[in-house]
Length: 231
Image (tube, rainbow, N blue to C red; front, top):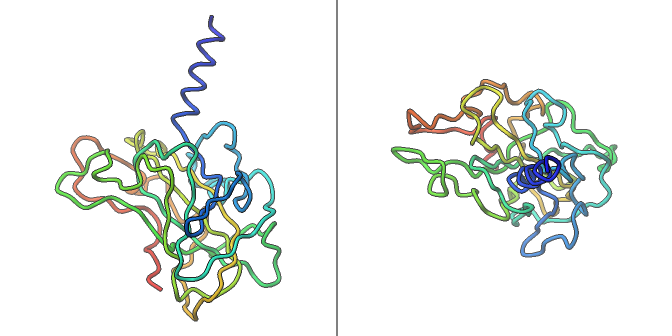
C-alpha cells in the first residue's frame, strides 16, 4: 500500500512540473522531443533547478546536442512545454553566439556570452496576483519570442527559462525550468547584443525577482537578470 501511495505522489509531482523538449519555428513544432533541443536532466522527472549558482542553470543538459534548426532574424521562435507551464512566474529567452571555431553540439557557453533576447513577465497592476491575469505564460503549452532583426547571423544556443514562484516566499524557493536549443540565425544584421552575462552568475539567490510575496501583495515585479536587448 505504501509503495502504491508513493507511486501516486511521484506521478502527481511529475505532472505538476514541466520541461521544454521541442522547438517551434513559425508554426512548425518538432515532431519529436530533443531534436533541436539538448536533452535535459529532467527528461523523466520534470524537476526544476533550484540552485542558481549551479552549472545546471546554463542548459541543464545530460548530453551533447545533435541537431541544429534554422530561423530567420525577425521571425518567431518558441518552445513547447510538456505538458504545460503549470507554475506562475516570468519566462525569459537568452541567446549566446557560438564562435566560428566551435562545434555547436559541444560548445558549453561559459563566461560572459549570454544576452536576454526576450521576456514574458508580469503584467503591471495595482495588486499582482498569482494567476493568468498577472502572468501571461502561466498554463500555456508553449512560449515564443521574436528573434531580433539586428542580431548578427550565425549559430546560437537559445535558452528558454521559466521561473516558478509558487514556493518562492523564501530564498532558494524558486524553481527554474529551462532548456537550450541549437539554432542557426540567417538574414541577421550588424547589432551588438548586450549586456553579456554569464550563466550561472547572472542571478543571486536573494535577487528580488526570485522571491515572491503572497502577503503583503506585491505591486511591482521585475524578472532577474539583465534587461532585454533592444536590437
